[in-house]
Image (cartoon, rainbow, N blue to C red):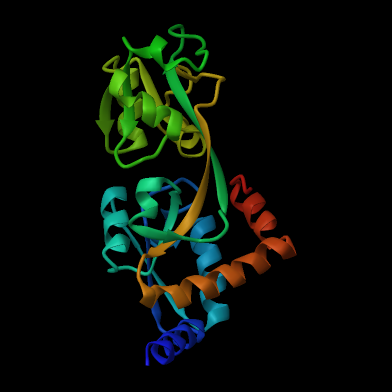
Length: 247
């Protein structure tokens, strides 16, 4: 009886997911997931999801949330797809990730011009620096290991982190280049702030799904279609058009 039940379960998991509306969520990531001028959600991530959803017979519905809230909704099974998370051990306990990443980021430090000019990679040398970091972001395993010895201030957005740095309320701001460079220009801070050349970490961004059996069929179908996008060169073309680095 147990073997029969296991066989039925395996068969159901392999069946195509029924056509439906997919709730796709994310937060403001420059060129990856953001609200356009007409109010629609645009960027590399939404374009990929729309393509794949259409090919699978689904309709994608997009919503934008604060990053911590977006992650929680997918972990709770209240949304179908989360766009853009970096893969960490902690997140893998709560969500299932796509097989392949769809973009790549460089995590770096920003400082005021004329202040700290370089960083060797030794976190002990930063113990006296006040460092602003974005709530809910992952900066890589080396940074995470060093957290207890760092003086960290949590901000809710790249804008807030850059303003905090410019106002001298922090000596450093840890962010990623893709999100930060456009905001520097928009805030008129390009002449005041500079990026340190040494990279904290190179992070891959993925799609994530609820870690539940009911979501497995969609994830497997999504992975198969995304693999085709990669192999056909379509992902590379989309990355160039959106000015986002792809793996």
